Structure formats: structure tokens, C-alpha cells
Length: 208
Image (tube, rainbow, N blue to C red; front, side, top):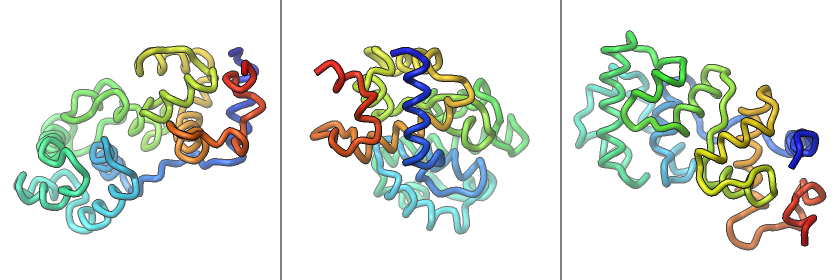
């Protein structure tokens, strides 16, 4: 796919979807915790958990007043709760000890935090700090390859190829659009191609 068609897709999606995440947060710290919790969990479930958790524990200092067992009880329903609790508490300690209590605002430092991989760092960097980054989750990977934006067999190559074909100013908003497109129309099973807002620009459909 060429850059011109990629721009057309981004603009069409901008008229359908928001460029904001579905996760609810009010600070970079809350976003970081929410994204860590979202691994293999729906945003709806995470929002229910954080609505309770953030009432009292909305800073690294407050979070560290919880024991691992206590935090596990809060986040039990999101899956992988034991490792997530361990990562969250470790990340909180590093935020305090290494970054003065503030979530770091750059990718390199974000990736040093426990539980923060490339995708999580990209989300926090782009959403909380206005940076240009593309977070490739299962929806972005599936959709961008299916519609022909890229042709990649892994998440990292998908991210790199998207960075090449999309204008840098569109990276952050485009990854939200692709997520929502994947959830609403371009689903893993039984995609709704008839109602898809970019059906005329989808290379998979064009090549049929």
C-alpha cells in the first residue's frame, strides 16, 4: 500500500472513531497502571477494577502501602493478577527511587519499568505525554496486515512498517483507530466487511 492510500484510510477512520483510549484515567500514573492491567483483559474489566483501586491508591506512594496480596485482591478479576501485582509494585518503587515519583516521559525510561514492554511504553508515551508512537496490540497487528497497510509476520515488524507508511503526526491517532476498527468491524472471526468504513480501501477486499 502506498502512503496516499494510507492517509485516506486514516482520515476516513477519523470520522468514525475517537483517537482516545477506552481506558479511564486522570494522570500518567493511572494510565500506566491501567495499561499494565489491560494485558489479556478487556478495557471494560480494567475500568471496573481501576474505579475501585484509584479511589485510594492513585499514586506510586499510595500504591506501595498495599501488600502484594492486598493488591492481588483488587485486580484478581483481570487475569495474570499475581504477575501484574508484582510488576505494579516494582514499577512504583522504581518511579519513586529513580524518577522522583513521576512516571518517566520518554520511551527509554518507560521501558525500564517492570511490566512495561514496548506496547505499554508506546501507549503511555503517546497518550499521556503527547509523543508520536504506535502501540501494536492484537487488533492493530491483525487489522493493519489484513487490510494491507503492512505485510509483517510479527508485532515489531508491524510497528516498524506502520511507522514507515503512516505520517509521523498520525502514528498515535492511527493506532487507536485500528484498535476500534478491529473491535467493531474487522474482527478476528466474521469481520463485517459490508459495513466497514474503509471497505473501498481495503486491499484484501480489492484483491478478491
